[in-house]
Image (cartoon, rainbow, N blue to C red; front, side):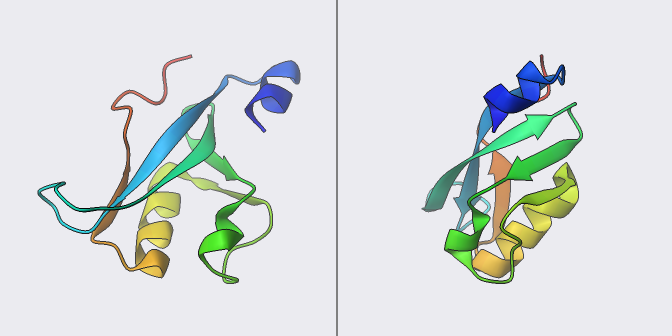
Length: 88
């Protein structure tokens, strides 16, 4: 997904989402790769593995995406492992 977005002229990169079971970040629930486009949008073509509530091609603002994914997967919170996912 990232390569296709870049080929279309978008600023996009692949980032890793971590689903943490605790706020201390000691217990990891999952890791998941997504595309962040333009620094504001998450593109996820494989989120349905976590539940049928997600669209087959999910595009959402970053905060909305992370909150929805955490809620549906029942982790304490989800975040990007790379703490600067919006750099070109």
